[in-house]
Length: 256
Image 1 (spheres, rainbow, N blue to C red):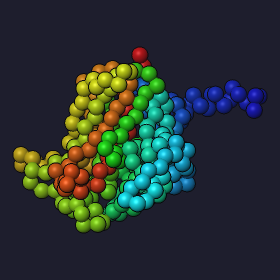
Image 2 (image 1 turned 30 degrees about the vertical axis):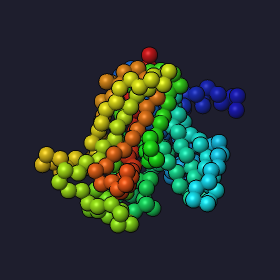
Image 3 (image 1 turned 45 degrees about the vertical axis):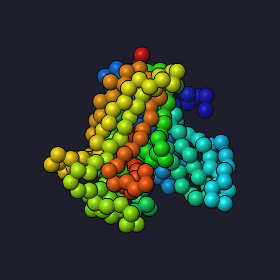
């Protein structure tokens, strides 16, 4: 192994230059979180079901619920995750390589509505916040942008009203679905936030995001962490009927 150290480093450097390894790629002097370094195993996704997080239990309607608060790491970014063992579900952030653009319903919750990750990559992050989802850099940094798209599960629901359960409806006049991205500094203080509409049927529009799309985050300034929250006009009793998912990739930030 020691004899081949030079060869191994040469291979790693070559792979990194194309942005498909455990390293972060670089974009005009900035760094890019690509999620290509996350191990997805044989399933093609990671959702915390390996139970490597911190266990915690609580009572809910007479049932003891056990969940694991964990995370996955890509480059300098740690993405929070909660896996619920009792109900075999998860929230906050997962990582995936699924690109099924046709199957409806919860069983296809890990797919982006695209044929690949952003820029033809293999992997991307999936956001499914119970309230909000959080990811954190290892140090305060100048955030630049990220790529975003709808998950297939959500897109087909917005377009056709096919969520697989009948709870959610097809979008029509005045409907909207957006993600709020908020930055926080090292002290946990909010820097700023932006809303990006993943679907917008207000004012005569009929837009549903169906491609990887850049979102400018420069207005958030220097941040340590980001939070994501989803809002839909199709809601009941304070909860969304629209499946609350979004996919992100290629988070660009300053090297300084």
